[in-house]
Length: 496
Image (cartoon, rainbow, N blue to C red; front, side, top):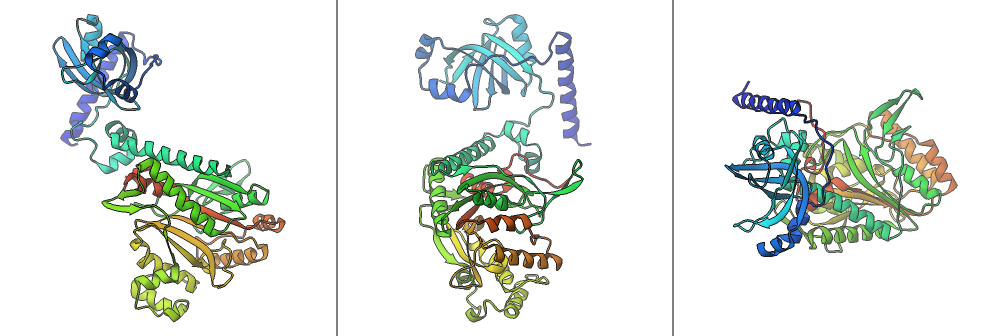
C-alpha cells in the first residue's frame, strides 16, 4: 500500500469520526433548504457594484454549495463555495455567529456541502463576498478532494470518476454545458424549419440501419433476442412512408466495436429525413446549421481546434471520393480505380487487409480511409460513394457504380453521413440479399434482410434525402476536445 493511500485512509477515518460526532449531536443529512441565488448570477449582478452600493442595498441572499477552500484566522474565516454555476466567497465572523455555529464551521472540511444566509459586501481586495449570518451543514464529504493547486491530473481517473472531475474542473463543466447548448441550438434550428422531432425504438428485432456489428440483448417475457439500435434509419423512413415528411431524432446508438479517441460503443446521433429533397439540399442544410451553431457557441465563423483554425463559413469544399483518392495518391492509375485486382495490389502495398468477399468499391473506400480521411482538414464534403458500401443509398442516374451519397469531414475526421434514400423496393431487396451474402461470407457488420422495411417501401416512400450527424464528434470540434471521452459524461473504459 502506498503512502498516498495510507494518508487518504487516515483522512477518511478522521472525517468518519466527525460524522459520528455529528450524528450523536442529531445530524441526519437534512432535507434541502431554500435558496434564492446562484454564484454566477450574483457575480453578474453585483460584482461591478462598489462596497458602498452593496451596503446601501443590504442585499441578503441564501445560497448552497460545496466548500472548495477554507481559511480560518482566529475569530474570522473565509471560504469558497461552489454551486452548479460557479464559485463565491463567504466570510464568517465569531462576533456575528453563535459560538456553536462558528465552532462547527471550524470543524468542517473542504468538500462538505453547506447552506449559508447573509448580506453581500466587498472585501478590501474588492471581492464579492457573503457575510454569513446563518450556516447549516447539508452533506458531510467523507473523502478528501484532490489538492486544488494540482487539480485532477490523472486522465483515467477523470473519465472513471467523472463526478470528481466535475467538482475540481470548471473547464470540464463548461464542456458539458456547451454540449447541452449545441444540442439545444440544433433542436431549435431544425424545429424552426418545421422539421418534427420524433422517437423510435432502441431495441430492434433485427439489426439494421447501418453497417456495423450490433449488441445483443434478451427479452425474458417474449423469450427472444433483440439488438440495441445501430441506427434509427429504417424506422425513421417508415415514418416518412406514413406521411411524416420532415423528421429528426437525436438518439443514442450502440455499435459493438472498438474504443478509441473517436469511438465509444454508445454514442449520440442526429438523424433527419426530408421528403422531396435532394442530397445537395441536405448538404446545404448541414453547412448552414454548423455555421449557425458555431456563431452562437463560439461567436465566430472560425473554430480553433487543437491549435489550428477552421473556417466554417459556407460553402464547404465538395470533392468526389475518387477524385480525393487520386489527389492524395497521384501514382494511382485513374483507369483502374474500379478494378478489383488492381485495388487489391494497392491495398497490399498500403498494408490494408483484404477480406474475402470485398469488391472494388469496398477496397476503394479502404484506400480512402487509409490515405485521405486524416488529411481532410478544412470542412469538406466527399461525394459519390461506391454502391457496394452504401446499401441504403439511391443509385446515381449517370453512373450506376456510384450512389448519391456524401460524408462530411473536418479536422481529419468524419462528422456526418447523408444520401439520397433508395426508395425502389425491388432494388432495396436486391441490396439486402447482397448484404446477406456478405454476412454469410463472414462479414459480421453486413446487414440482414429486413422484410417489414421492404413491405413499407412497397406502400411507397417519396423521394427522400437523409442525414446522420455524430453529435459527440461535433461537440469535440466545437469545444476543442481531443478525445470523445472528454465530451461524454461516462465513457466506456476497459476494465482495470
